[in-house]
Image (cartoon, rainbow, N blue to C red; front, top):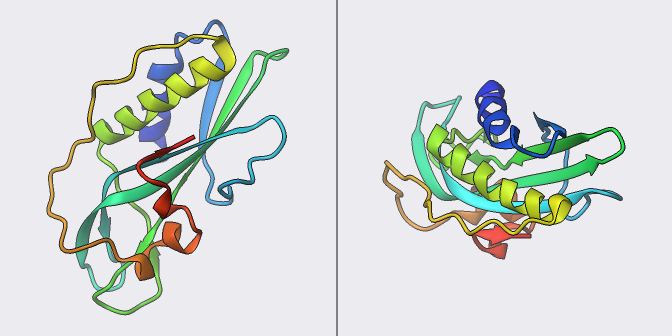
Length: 164
């Protein structure tokens, strides 16, 4: 899964003025605590979940992803850290947080939106807004369940679909 994110990211980052950018998945990053020189971008997207305990499957249209990003301009190296917030299964009652599974299309849309933020922040560009929407090929059963959402428990779910 990390390779899928990295591959799509490399395609987007290829044209960033000679700087080398890397992406890493990092579940330890905390929203609002990005540190000096780092920027934060939060995006909500569609994803699927599979319970590792009871095999229940569900979809959510409100899966939060936090990006922390920085550029060391003297070394021409940029770093993006990504945290994908998890959810618990409501069926089996286990307190096992499950990782979201995003379609490659939705990863691509998220990273395209992130690239716009990077271009604005570090390159002085103002690319047009993406007209692409997130892809959803599932069924959402009922309202968002805050009791089972790691992002809600961290206080970031209510920030809407895009936060910068």
